Amino acid sequence: MKVAFIGLGVMGYPMAGHLQQNGRDVCVYNRTTEKAKKWVEQYNGTMAETPKAASLNADIVFACVGNDHDMRAVTLGDTGIYAGLKNGGLLVDHTTTSAQLAKELAQQAQNQNKRFMDAPVSGGQAGAENGALTIMCGANEIDFAEAEPIMAAYAKFTKRIGDIGSGQLAKMVNQICIAGVVQGLSEGLHFAQNAGLDAEAVIETIEKGAAGSWQMENRHKTMLAGEYDHGFAVDWMRKDLGFALNEARENKSHLPVTALVDQFYSEVQAMGGHRWDTSSLLARLESKK
Image (cartoon, rainbow, N blue to C red; front, side, top):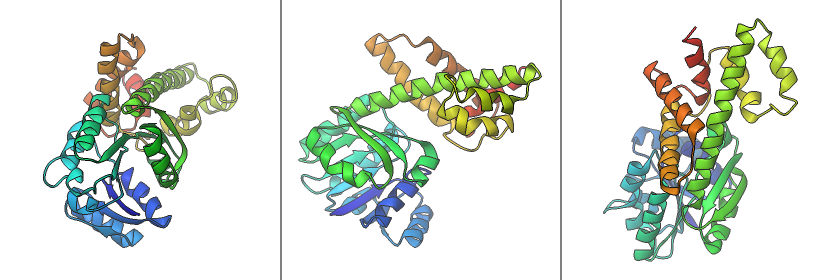
């Protein structure tokens, strides 16, 4: 089976590496050539100069890029993935995009006798590096069954949510939930410090009860230290929350907390925190003292 991976950012780089280390012969493409060369040297794979060249006659292509615009750019056109992917080949998109784009790319694939599935991931850079991502998929059952054992190289859990677009909608649910949890944790730590409590002692106690969360376990220490370079960037979170809020307007969902936290993240951006991780909501609270 010929495999290609398009996009070697903080997520795609280790994901493609796991595929190569698990016996797949992977050809990669990255917009920044130096990054692709570094990957080839580290993992002993191959690289190409265009998405088309990387995908040429591939059975399955994985993509993990930035946003809707980036995904269209690497998929469509004379140098895009679809121009190289063989007839009947499958494109698996790990990018977090709009559900609308997933449906658009699936239709384009069908028009060209190719296949598509949306498969956004959760788990952040650490999850990608440790091969412990969660993947939520929008696909038909046959395509999912083909892709799942290959994605197992970098996933701890993979689930077919439904048809095309369902994976992206599930990722929106994921980000909606995270936004509220991180804001709650930030407010809790902020309150503990202002109340003169030993915040570490408080967290050690409450994380074993109903207040416990992944964010609390993995982020509270760095938050208390004012370190915000350990995870998913604020810019990307705002992109994802934008998708969720747009979709909510379409399906008549009411997301007041999500909309408020999105506004808080815009304030973090104004503080210069575009690349800070999402736990930097605490920095916003501290700036208001």
